[in-house]
Image (cartoon, rainbow, N blue to C red; front, side, top):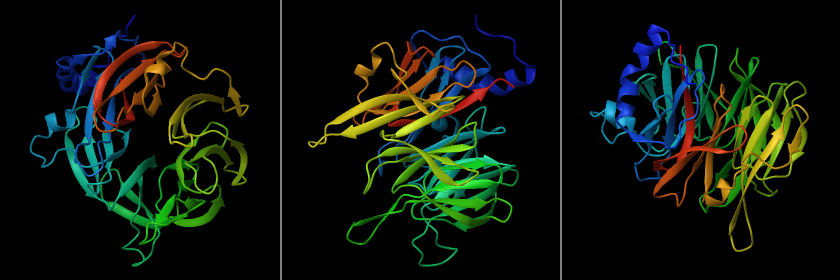
Length: 373
């Protein structure tokens, strides 16, 4: 039975967004029971240089899916959301979207996706939060040391929405995570003028108090995602470089690699003691094979059978984004399809059975859950 007892403040906060999504298309074939999450935003990356990043909202209470809600609530913003959405998160009452190609961090009201402010950052990539601050990785480190090839992390105050500090890290920083008073940043790769890559295998460590780099942990080249578990470890993915793609476990106390899973991890998410991993591997003819691996974070072992158990994975053309509802533990993943046409959203129960699906924007990727307050 769906929970329908809301605090009055939460009902008022979400009324406008929910009303708009009631006019959207229904999700199929059914709507799951909801916990304390009313729905979620889904950022569609779009195709690079096509200016077609969009923001959708899936209303789990009413079972409706609204597309392109950013443009709906910001009709006067030129070019809409922009080019190449790369990360999305809610912190407090604000919704933050990293738009790499448009060189900005878009800050919106959580309840309506109405713009509050655009913060200019050159090639931002990923976002994390701690202590009332926003931390954003960016490819461009100029402005700190002109001429450097290093990227940087930008600190933004969530009250003033002003950039307060910057720090250099490694080359083309991607994912980042906060554990205690330290920020861990995955570095990836840099290309010279002849497009020859040099892979960065360092996980940069930033002290948040001084906002200085205090260590580099050697992991693997071409890293992408960094996500913490409940045991003081970080799971770090390498997309492959001079070594095959793999998922690494880094202990934040010793700041060393303590385990390696020899599986591709194109994307993954944490849910309690579970690590849900989407993997893509290629044969000699560049034909892809997709995998859906489940890891127990407490024992650091692979759980046989993965996390989709009804055969739906046979219909997924290109698994791309993944998230787990923190209250119901329902699993949501996206299918990028051909990367140029609208993709799909799939929802599964914790037992891996299909609950819903909906058509999305182009390259659906990043989730942000909205809670009842």
